Length: 165
Image: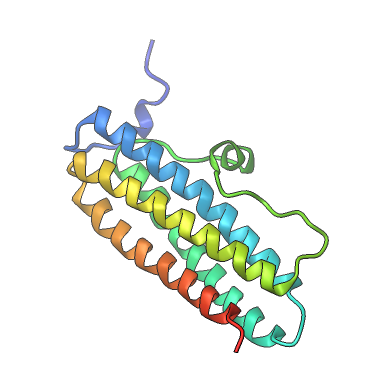
């Protein structure tokens, strides 16, 4: 009987066992990126208060930056010969960043929560960096550096925007 996944076996010179570990790390980052994107967009839609315009625009920019990474993450998983997330349910099974379904969140709490979520993503990216470096996946390693820098910048902007005085 033929392997039903054979059509998705992308050729790679990387060790198959190593790429499975890389794919697991990237799929976790992908799930958390989608969770963070949706939370950022939710807060963008629901922010209120005296700094509405500034926060609204900043959160929209940050959401767009996060969403832009998702396709690249999924394509890295495929390039290593593995499969990626397939549904919202699959995302929810892999995400570690918590959703926020509250009817109202103050702007200050939004910024603080997103800052912490971005810092959590930074930690996950650093963990993944160790995994991909061990697998000798140079392409993913380089991209992880860029995503780490972006998440650190988002956390910084959220921190500075929340400062009083």
